[in-house]
Image (cartoon, rainbow, N blue to C red; front, side, top):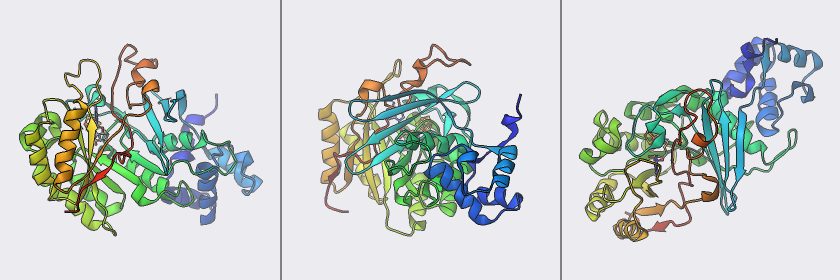
Length: 382
Ligand code: SAH
Ligand code: SF4
């Protein structure tokens, strides 16, 4: 038996923590940068191949640390190029990650928790309840695995992942520190080097954490609204009872005001037939959204067994969108991608054996396409 599990997993060290780690070893700062590059840019997990680190240092590293990757139990590529990975985490539960290629960019949808405690009525991740937070290594490991699938270890890879959205399983603001550290790695020039505009955190509205987020980072923000009034939102997104719309809108504006540029929030609105897709909802939503600089992303409900909700017809979707566009809003309808591999997030996890607790479960159905689909329609600016 080795003592492997107790070794520090360098995969999960943020740039600041990597520096601290090397400082503890009595090494200079540039070693941290070299290590970040080996791991995240070159996909190298073998210390022996890190030739710019001396032999002695490599031996020391192997003694106290390791680069432990997530266990991929499923990977598939859809006809349209969408890719999906299911990764089994220690403990047996699985999470999933989806890559969506488009003409000008490639978006990776990343999970932040196993399950979710917030229990939104239309979300199958919510239906499975909360299991646990993902560690930094488990979050950034999803980016590592996806990035590496485009290249071989040790080679400089093409930058196929241009955008990351924290829209997989879980509420990222409830796993705050690990999500912030992971996003810092995504944006660090020695790691994935993504622009802060191209890393998006999606939240159902954990207001105090939105303020905290604005104090430590300037990533793009997506807010899962789904209803234009408190009465309906209380039913769909229960956290609204704690942080109602007025507070959520104010917190969104506070976040935007801290950004160094004039970025808009993305407002996600999952459309469910007869629930929140009537014209009266469009009217109410339009008024509410005049209070926030935003683009509205309409997400057709992604059905899953026994959800009790239906995806609206295209006519209803377009009618809703057209009203908003005519009112001057920027609106996208999220397109469905990767249907042939169940790439809509969550649909697959339940089919891959889960040894710990839910082998028979057909888990969930988060829609995972890019937040800016090609169907963007811009109205006159507000
Ligand atoms: N917890 C965060 C991020 C993960 S969910 C949040 O709620 O924002 C990512 C997006 O998918 C959210 O907007 C969520 O409301 C939406 N979603 C969840 N279940 C869905 C479903 N069945 N169909 C369509 N969208 C869904
Ligand atoms: Fe959690 Fe987001 Fe699903 Fe709500 S929609 S239950 S916050 S993952």
